Image (cartoon, rainbow, N blue to C red; front, side):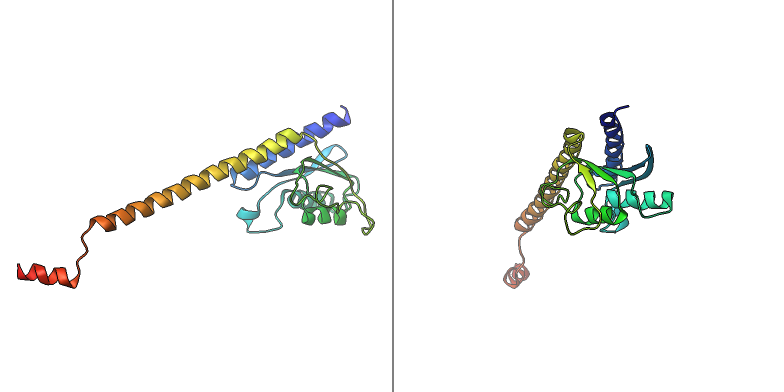
Length: 190
C-alpha cells in the first residue's frame, strides 16, 4: 500500500469515529493514532457528554495511545484527525512528541496547524511536529457542514415552536374577558 492509500484508510477510520461524536450530539470530529501501521489510539469529540472542555477527539486518542505504549512520548506515531487541530490539541501534540499530524479539513477560525497559527512547528518549541492537511478534505468538511446545517435547522424549528406557543398563549389571554373590579360590581348588580 502507498502512503497516500494508508493516509486515506486511517482518515476514513477517523471519519467513522466522527460519526460516533455526531450520534452523541457532539461536533463530528474523529481522530486515530497509528504506530508502526497499527491503530493504538482512537477518539471522538465528547465534550458535552463528559462535561470536559479537554475531551477533543485528538486528546482522547493521544491519551489512549499513551496508555497502550505506556509512555506519553509518541515519537514514531502519526495522528489522523478530521479537522485541523485547535491550539490546545496542537500543544498536546507537541508535548507528546508525536511524529506527524495528518488532518482533513482546515479550520479558518481556530486552526493551529497553519490556517490561523502554527503551534506544531515554530522556533519557540523544543519539538517540531510534521503535518499535512487536506487528506479527504471534501469528505471531512461535508461531514462537519452537514452537522451544522442540521443543527441550525433544528434550532430554527425549536425557536419557531417557542414563538408559536407564546403567540397562542398571548391570543388566549386576549380572548378571555378581563374581570376588573368594575366588571365584578356590574355583575353583582344584574
